[in-house]
Length: 417
Image (cartoon, rainbow, N blue to C red; front, side, top):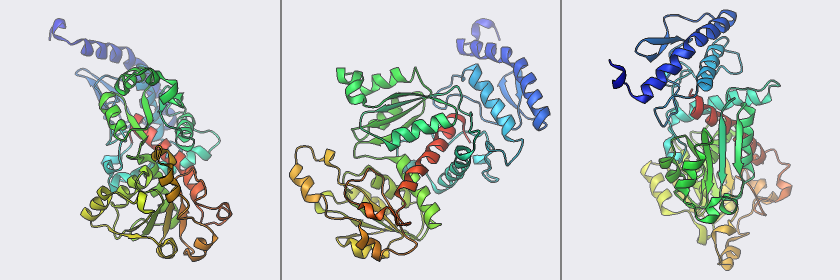
């Protein structure tokens, strides 16, 4: 093949590979001699004529949404990490996901972005939860981890947030990465000057490796993902969805109750505007013999699209106006606040809905001993503070689990399994 027939991309790629081959070989061989023998028969083909030795077959370390190679530093970092990861199954960075090649170390994560709960199936959920449990070990270890060193996460929040934004930023930093953040992008970014979301995303992706975004419009995360060439995580899009919250909710239910099949869940509060309950309903539909109770004031009842989806999946659901009765039957009572910001100027409707269903000592008195109370937070008065001391009040443990789930997602989207 003549030089003139090669694309600029091919030339750049081969130049990078040729310069790094010697360095990879020396560095990886040194580390592998110290820790675990590397099989010379296993390699990753980087060009028609060059192969780099690694400990096992892996997917090419590219940006998952485009064909350009990662920077040399990140390319080296990933190979180095994988070589070290197989040295010992008890190593805090080595994540064993069973025998499935789909989830073997180094294989590409199945999703380019995290936009909605419908993206996940049971197999992926179980594997993510395994990674989250490993992240919990990393977080609790004194040494921590640096597997995302050299990566930058941008958080674009057009709506207020405490737990979601801080847990994502904490997750990135605990894995060795760095954070670029804007807390109120609606007022303190170029959006205030009229810049479109698409232009903002195209700009920010030039500064970062992954974008975490919260927006006031339903569907905004999908628009961002279709624009960006780097991964986008939906941290809540208006009354649409909040998939990472749903992931941590299901993870918490499994940890607290011990199972996900055969559970009874009561969703309480603002079900019309609550993106968390919508996403949770989608994920609960993945499991067998689940029944969902909807308990909400008339003005904020669960919308028909969720009911129709559950029915199409064979999930039994029931609407009720009696919180006490529902609480006595459920394994999980998922309380939410009535969201004043979704009512606009209709404060009268907000006041009508607010305070109708409150989890207090009376509700706890009928709750089963093994059951738990969850809440995505923040709360106002829909759970009284005297409930906090009850061991079945799991909402602060739930919030902490968000750190582990988000650590897992960042690792998976940037490095793969």
